[in-house]
Image 1: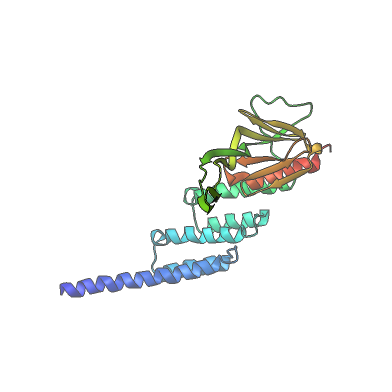
Image 2: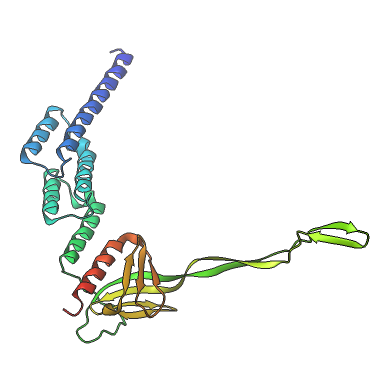
Length: 266
């Protein structure tokens, strides 16, 4: 057989296989575009896979991508309902995916489940070593964080200028543009105490290595969540800005705080 013909044959086969995989991927992604996966769609896709002679190994990565797309659709509104979670489980089963293949998604799904539970009033409880709780008080959450404040972070001396001397008349001159040296300060936001922000059924507490606070929930005047922390105002001092060590749990901390404040005294 002509060696060039053999090479061309392999190239054409590879090209057909790539086209078949692209067709299967398009059909698969369209099937999960609405966040669900009907039996008819499953049967149709399996039939297409057989028709195109695609092995499970050849479409393995496409199945993972399809689940990721379905998950993205489900969480697009910032939450995943119980119905959506059941749909995702069904899609996972239909795609024959193992937990290991969607490990990162499973972790994120667990966070959404926890957030849903909290918003429904099922607040978790935690053990905070060394924290003395009051009677009937429950510790809900502890988040690694730092209190930050605006402080002077550097100073430098800016030298003066002699200016320019202008002679007005014999024996008389006038100096313009002269200035004395002075110190300029530069400020910035810096951590002043590192520890944990603890939310309980009665208080919001910061336990830090240098500074902390302890405020009853009914004394809070304002709680303002940010993308990386929270500002707490209780009227007894200036607002306290708390920066979380990681932004991963901002929504969970906000939900726990909201439930704790709304349920205080009930």
